[in-house]
Length: 232
Ligand code: C5P
Image (cartoon, rainbow, N blue to C red; front, side, top):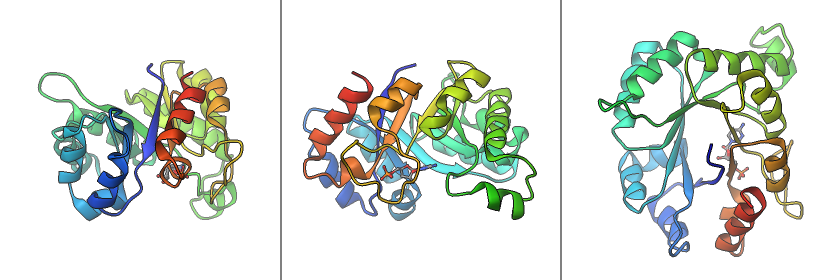
């Protein structure tokens, strides 16, 4: 699995996004487009970033009835993205439908990964509000196993969970991990954080890095530092 650094382009306009990407002369980082940018600019932003030569992780976290997700995935796969995600909570049937929708006529498809439990959900709330009567860790691992059973390629998880996910689902099952900070940078609102070097050591396949790169005085230098630490 090709280790790579994915930059979270959490901007709300095409203008701001392109001004940011323009700084990377000659380099084409893998970028993540989330709900904010996608809903602000529509699918055209995906086509334009793709035309510039970037790989794209479309982070829209789909969760609906299987038929709706299948049809939505069919539309997204025509955008020529490289990675997309759904909620494992939608059930194995929904994940299988997503895979079917995503697979193009020539048999190719983007990587499909699952969100297990959002990192914003505490164990306490998961148990008292969602009535999931288990530990958070067990739930995450069980959802990862469901994703694997459905034929997905991997999960989004904390870097701290990468090793356990690989132990349960195999080393080829991809772990995509946000919550990355340099040893000397601000934590922002992230709680459980890991440096790029530590994420590499634990076994993340892709790290997702936002503010440590987008808000840096020199974003290109910060990106290169991430690549250096993570890919080596
Ligand atoms: O700026 P920062 O590096 O914290 O950005 C991390 C990115 O990863 C954001 O786009 C955030 O929404 C996303 N993310 C996360 N934690 C998760 C899932 C996604 O931080 N569990």
